[in-house]
Image 1 (cartoon, rainbow over the protein chains, first blue to last red):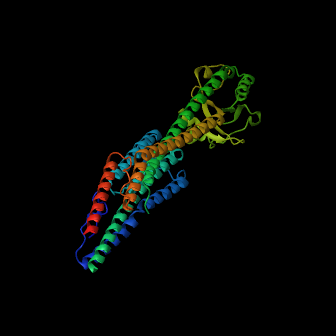
Image 2 (image 1 turned 90 degrees about the vertical axis):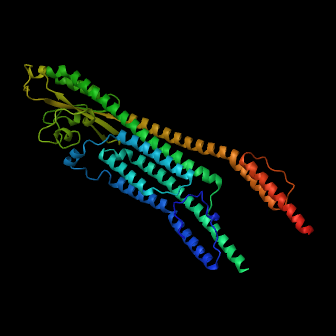
Image 3 (image 1 turned 180 degrees about the vertical axis):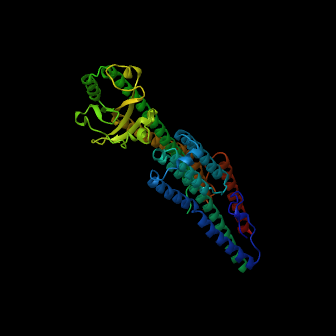
Length: 184
Length: 270
């Protein structure tokens, strides 16, 4: 009885039917305890991705100006890089959209998590600023965008899983009461 | 590990608003800094052209004293770090610092390499490409421009001169302006933006907290206190002042408490 992780909290677990038999009760209890452990593990995913991003940012800051530029032939193939102002405009649009989407997920109670995609998008911004020779000036803007987006994502995913854990624990309490009642 | 209702409401708002304001401030600061630097380079290029044109007549007349006088006068202005005129071979012919006269600069040094990187020196360049930045002995940032002095018809047609018409560039003018005032302006801008971000953060947190406290947290606290008193058996307490859905919950709690009280009475009589 594995509960899908992304299930909406609008379908609370405390409405789930309780098993009639003692054996069913034990099985349901074990499954619920396993889900609690899984939720606890997953609730920290946001923090791991935030740490990953901070690590990458540290490397980007240390090596940014020392990283070799593309050879002239590759630069010619790729064409002129976008201007720093254009990249900055895109960074604002991206940050705004990401924050709105996370707030939307918080409002609807959806447990979807897109931390890895955000780390990827932010890396692309670092790469574009590097190619446009503007990474030193705009490093902190990308860092601030990453910390904001991944912090909000981490907070959302943590509270969502805490809510699920609370519901699972309530379900376990109901199972225990049922078992006690059956014992007489 | 539960978080209070107020914490749940305020934390995401604080992260979102503060983070977005900080991102926008950082990018806006960079855009303003870039615009101000471009303006300074334009101003410096215009100043370099003014110096070149001012010295033109004296150069045509081979009046070295007047050229040196112009260079010294411009170099003595506030914020002007140095004014130098190099000949074709990179020897300093005129300078606002007399100690460096007749010194030859390395073609690979910053400011020269941009044109002398290839086998044939570049004769034309954009104003931003002509600019370079360095720190002087006082630790101040200096923005310098290297402007070419082009060979023109009145130069190669003059009787006193030896420049052939094929020679495009006669020499270069190097002028550097201290960025002290620009850095001070940018520092003021940074502190104002930081203050603005803190004010936005405080206003947002205070505004959201005030609205939520007035319309949600206080009524929920009153409802909680009411429910606890009912649970403790105090049936005669008045329903608290609530509105909307909370008023319905309060009324329902009161009805539940009344009906359970009646049931308890019946059971005790039987």
